[in-house]
Image (cartoon, rainbow, N blue to C red):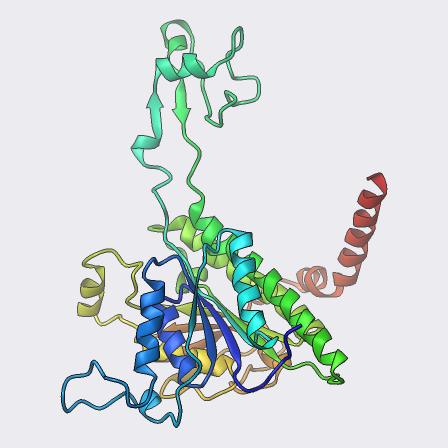
Length: 385
C-alpha cells in the first residue's frame, strides 16, 4: 500500500485544462499541492508541461521583458510537485476510477477534490427538428399487426401517435432527448463523490494500521452554478443539474462530516469567462459590467480550504435557527455550505425556511424512521435473492 505522507497534499481537479479548473490548478500548485489534472482535452499533457515551466524558479518565462511574475509564483522558495495530467471522461465510472487510483498511488492520500468539469445543454429539447411526420419511419418501426400505441412507444425509443383515415399513415416520430448534460454535470459528480469517499476511507484504514487514529479532514467542492438557485430558460438541463448538485451537497454533507471527516461544499459561480461561453457572449456581458473575476472564484475555494476570502466581501445569511456560517469555522459549521460567487462578493446561501413544523419534522426528526424503513427494505430485497 502507499504510505500516507503530509509532505505535499494531493488534489484532483476535473475540467482542469481550462477555465476555472486550470486557474484552480495553478492556485493549488502555488500552495505546493500535487495536482492531478483530469480532462478530455487532447492537449492536456502540453498544458501540464507548461505549468511546470511556469512554476519552476529560474525557468524561462513567457512574460514580456520587464514584467514581474505573479506573486503566487514568484514567492515560492521551491517548485511544487509537477502536475499529472490524466485523460479522463468523467461520464465513465471506469475512467474516473483510474483517475483516483493514479492520485492515490502518489502518497496514499487524496486531500482535496474539485468536481468542476461540466458542459452546457447539448441541444434544445423542443427544437423543431426533433419532431417529424414520417410515414416511412412509422412503417419501418412498427411490428406487423400492431400500431405501436399499446405501450405508447414503437419499440425503438421513439414515441408515436395514430390518427384515423388518411392520417393513419402519418406517425409522429420524436427522438429521445440528449441527456449528455445530465450524465456529465450530475451523474458523473455522484460517481466522483462515491470514489472520493471510498479512497478517503481506505486512507484512514491505512493510517490506523500505522497507529494514527485521528483521520485528517478532507475536502470536496462541487462546482454548481448561480443557476443552481435561479431559473434559467436558456439552458434548462444544465440548470436542472446544477439545482440537483446543491441538493446533493446539502443532503450528503452532514453524514460525510460526521462519518468520514469530509467537508463537502458547493460553489455557485456567476458568469465567469470560460470555454463554455459561445463566441461573442463574453464581450457582450463584459460591456454590461457583469463579469465575475477568476480571483473571486479562487477566494471562495480558499474559504472552503479554511483560509481567508482575500479581497472579496462576505455576505452571510442567518441559518434556520439563527446561526451563521462563518468563514474559517469548524467542519460542522461549514458542512454543506454553498457559496454564490458574484462580482467580488461571496454569498453563503442557506436552504429555504421550512413552510411549517410538519415539513421540518419530515426532513429532520423523521430521518431515523426513513433510514430504518429503507434498511429493512434492503434486507428484504437481499432475502429474495
